[in-house]
Length: 360
Image 1: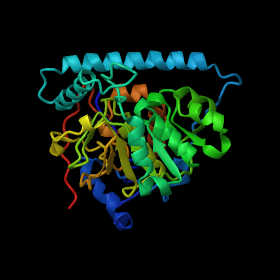
Image 2 (image 1 turned 180 degrees about the horizontal axis):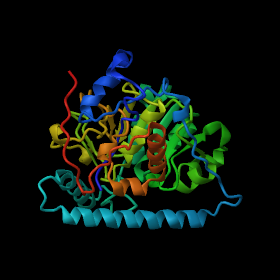
Image 3 (image 1 turned 30 degrees about the horizontal axis):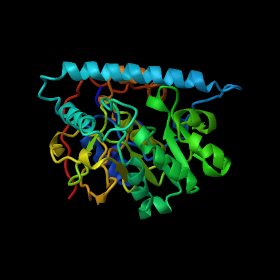
Image 4 (image 1 turned 90 degrees about the vertical axis):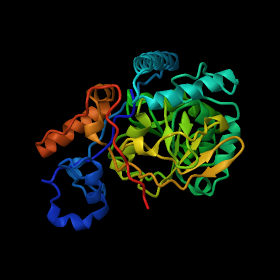
């Protein structure tokens, strides 16, 4: 399933056009949401009754083997679903993203640039030189000054997670596919030297991380995102096709943890750099990248692609909503508070293309 998600959170009953001058940039966002009757509220000014906490609890005895077995089973199921979707879209001219993804995955396997887990198809591909790319990222000024870094949970960014904690920073990482929860926070000063390496794995995050909810007061200074392909000229990026990176980004915007100035960086192999991602076909919630780190170079894209403003409910399919518990709970809460039903996206494999304007 391709990216289907991200957010206008309140209706005009909460913020009328008469006071839209208070939030001019957010009011303008309405046009990017296909003129839906909704606005994105600034998280710092929204009513406290919008905030809610998802209670999370850990069992007294953590069963690492059972956790990993379940994670791998869910991963295998999701990859089968993506493979079936890709097969059904082979003759669909709108499936251009899958054409690029397959080309990259095939090339990485054929040229042996891929690392375990293999095959890299339907994954954020682990690549030869991932640690070198992580070191390039570590040298960035924006990484060095960051106090809290959000890093995706995929294999090629494992070293980035390790360096984040080793350098004394706070690590924010999503729970796999957002199925079991939301985000987890790991704080280096609460980990021993011996547990930092384990804390960079999915099992370690479950053991040592602190689950958070949407009401967590947190500021994220840098976002690290995984990619299948990325265009160094424009910053346009393709993930593996599930849309979780976009959901995670939208949730952080809702929380007030990030804004347009928050840098987005990705680490990829040089063979994942492409020049044929059509910017005009990107969806409104696709997340562009500001910086690309490969094993051999650092690229500042100076992207002009607008960053998503939150969760666009009209792009969120019923299937994706059914997959992510936190989104269902958020949707129910907003609808209960406003007394109005949020829009739902189409139940289809690839949503209609929403053209995006480029910033001047």
